[in-house]
Figure 1 (cartoon, rainbow, N blue to C red):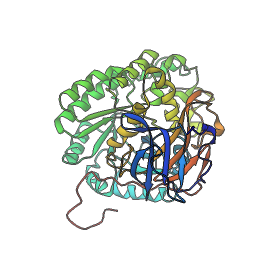
Figure 2: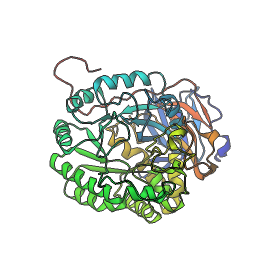
Figure 3: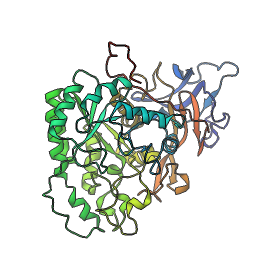
Figure 4: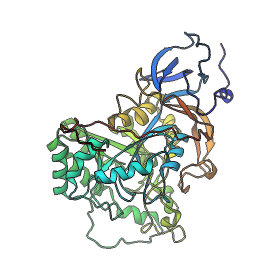
Length: 476
C-alpha cells in the first residue's frame, strides 16, 4: 500500500473530531520509530498494534497520516501566561492557542507576572478562575515560594500545584520577591517527605551595587552585567541544599555551561536534581545580537557561540534533562525598542509556538534522533511535573495527546503565523525546519494547518504529590 502524500493527510476529519485510530509509518514509541496503529477510546490510548493489522470498525474515525511523524504531545513546563492582572502581556486564550499550534498539549504556568502571583491557596483559586473556559490545551500550575509563605505550600500541594518556583535574585516584579537562605531552609523543610519539586531561578547578585559600565545599546554591556559566575554561585548553593534536604530541586533555564560540572558532581553524590535549558540558549548567540535589539534580552542572558555549542554537547551527553520555552512575553513598550536600552528593557523571549521547530532545526544536524526529541520535549518534562504516569509517552493507558509533524518541511517565521498575544521576538524571519501539521488532545483534533477547533478543549491538571489530608476539609 503506497503512502498518502503528506499534503493530503488529515483532510478527511473535521476539527473537533474524536479520533479513534491514528495510523502512521513513523510513530515515536519509546526509543523506536515504528509503523503502527494507535487505538483510542475515551481520550486514552487503548492499544498499539502493527501498522494496518486490524481493519477499522465501520464508522471509526481513522487518521492515516502517511509518513508524517506522530509523537507524544510536547509538554512545556516553563510558560508565563500572566493572567490575571497582566493579560495584556499574555493570557490563557492566546497562550494555549499558540501552544496547540506548536504541538504542545500541556503547559505548566509559572506563578509570577500574574496579579496576584500564585503564592497562596487563595491566589491559586483566583488563577484557576481566570483560566476557566479559555484553554485550548491542558494547563498545570506551579506555585511560588517567596519570603514568609512557607505555611501556604502544603495547602497548595493539596490543591494540585505541580511544585514551586523561587528566585535567588530580583524577579523583576515587586509582588514576587526573591528568597533568602533562611526562606529556603523553611520551604525545603516543609517539602521534605513530599514528591514535590522546587524550581530555582539560579542567579545570585554578586555585584557591589555599582551601575553597569558601557553603552546600554550594546548587548555586551548587558551580558557583562549578568556573568556566568552569578549562575555558578547560585547552583553551588542549590546543590548543597538539595543534598542536605533530599528534596527534588530543578534548575530552570540553565544558560552557562560552566555550571554543568557542579550539577554532575551533585547528581553523582545523590542529589535529586534536574536541569533544563531553553530554545533561545540553543538557537541564539551573543555575537549575532545587533545593537538596540532588545527583543533578544532575557535573564540569564544569551551567551556566546562557544557556550551554545557546549550546551548542545551537554544535552547530547545527558547532563541536561529537558528543553523548554521559558515563554516570557510583555507588551512592546516594555522592550524600549525606540531607545534600544538593553539595561532598562524587560527581559523575556516569546517562543511558545516555535519550540519544536526551533529545536529540530538545530538538533537534526547534530545527531539527535526523533526519540531524543520526544524524550527532551515530552517525556522528561512530564516526569518533572509528576505527569509521567499519564502524559509524555505513547503507552497504553496514557492520555491520547499527540503532535503530528513533518520533520522535512521548512517554513519562515512570520507575524501572521503566530498566535501568542505580543508577536515581537528574535525569530521573526528565521527559516525553520519541522512544521507542526496537527495536534490531538485526549483524542480530539484541536489543531490542523493553521486552524483551531474553536471550542477550548483543555482542562486544568491537578497533580498529586502529597497524600490527602486526614481531615475532610476541602482545599479547592
